[in-house]
Length: 287
Image (cartoon, rainbow, N blue to C red; front, side, top):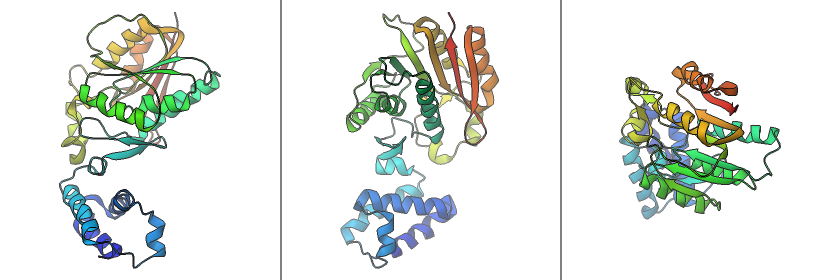
């Protein structure tokens, strides 16, 4: 079958669900993943043809896409901050907003001339490891820790650390359960669960039906549970002038910021993402 004919089938089956541009993206991701053929090659070779065995993988992907299974789970991989990551149903699919969080942390470290110094960093709720691994890859001398309550998520994160050739210290623990540490960190960063159940109506079915709810949702009555706990953890486990970074619920920016104010953090800043939503928060341990 010609690749262009297969592309036409993708559009016929999926455009009504996803729209033409996204279906284009799906098709070329599959071409790259299954055949290791770059997009431009199909432009140069309009008669490019797939064997019957090669088309089977595409039709399987098409069937899953019709069920609104995320393309990242179908292919088992995605890209984040210029790096490749394995993903499955045990971890959230990394988002562009989280790339902005990584960029913010790295820029501030660079501004403080800490990027070549020995610093300790912990990512709380690491999931696929995208934050911790991206930081470790870009910080030469950082000692990076990755904590998650999910054993299955940590297995994925370990695979990703090996894939990207970085060394992390993995910790299986529930941050909501109080425990003591014999170390202090220069940077604490977290993208914890923050979507309230009342916000489920805003979530696309491909996310709601496939991604782990443990990593997504919090109780409507206590939506800042993780932020309160991690802020208290930071008070006890950040070095003097150490920094805390959060990805946050866009609707609860001021409320989350107040947690840091109440904990006597300094240099507190709330940042918007590229879509203009409150999305990132940072503060410095004052004393």
